[in-house]
Image (cartoon, rainbow, N blue to C red):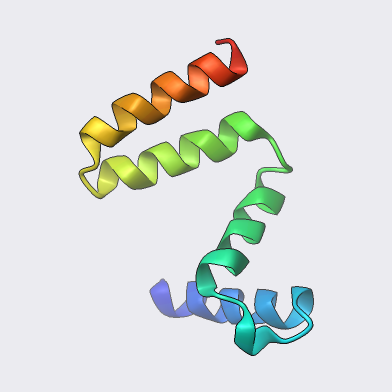
Length: 74
């Protein structure tokens, strides 16, 4: 699965950056996530939250969630 994701990231770089060699994987994946969730901030937040949770950034996620709620008024 990682191999396929990397191929998609490389394709994204070629399609969205004037010089793909200067684009980072993070930039390309960020664009892909934004487009996949159709620029829906809540879904993008949920995706990032789950990625941090999987990486054991629990205390960060508490702050991240509080900031999201304050910013989005939820």
